[in-house]
Image (cartoon, rainbow, N blue to C red; front, side, top):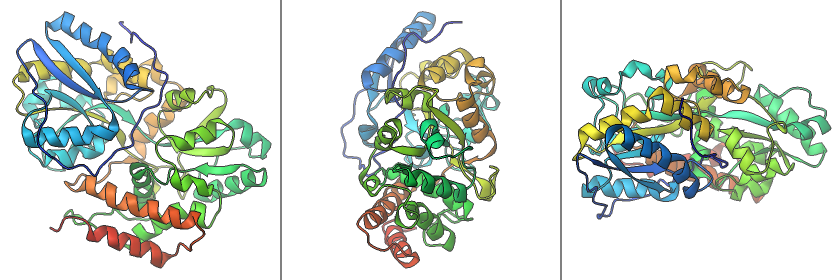
Length: 434
């Protein structure tokens, strides 16, 4: 079997900038029957790492099909802006990566190719993909706007050395146990758990899961924002209270952005983090695989499942095709290639993620305990973020509310049920009116 041709040593970067507006412009795809343009998201330690991972695979695709793929790897800070510009200008790539949480929002623009039965048939069928990954490909009741490419989920990672020094024999499985472990770590002069208070998307990922645990969905069944329900308020307060009330998060974490909490974890300053793709993320911080352990993210009962025992959002990257591509046949061939078992095994192994293709998941590369936790979470206890057109705005306004509440906690200002509800009410007022 042909394997990936370069090592990836960096972290998957999932922090999203979701305040973009379309402003015209875009790029000419320049497509022909023998050419495709492909916008890839930054999955490795740098754009150059991604190019080293992807270019040999694209060269192999050209060798097999005669179709040349022009690759551009785009940072997450720019990707949504570039995509939105392309949807309004009509000038963009043929094929592109999107964060799976954007699927319904981008679907609503009408610019992406719908994956109906015929199009899925061209890549081997819809039933090849894991159900949880398909749940984050577009609005319910509509043909998906994208195809799953890489799958990820959150788990609880703990620093083995710090746990041993604090006398913590087993990783926590409930939030009460997380707090207990955090206080033991604090007694040894260490931080209990790391958060990234200025990382809007990470804020959303965590409070969404806690919302599920409190019976809240943040949107009603007909898609209207519901940010101020008792469950939503309780979820946000519980998360911020890890700093404000429980004191197991260092106040400086209120200002942390993408990946900053991982540095403290790797440098033996923080005992726990909720994270994804550890083998790449932690190695980029200089942490060896024997220095950290993994357990499912905590739930009230201690046993992850559905509903109030949900312990992760369905994280991942989807592959989409612009509907106005001049090379639809080539684009479908490329998606089929990228979602083939061989490519799924190679690319997900390189990036430390899990294939959303069922048969590829069975490869021995994904039997590692850290990946097994992610795979099992995706199969049994992860839920998709709301697949509504306003999802990107939701990430921005509620993520910002959580950021502001962390700032209050860090400054010693009280975080109460009333202050949380007021922040969420302000966020809800900023959402588009139905």
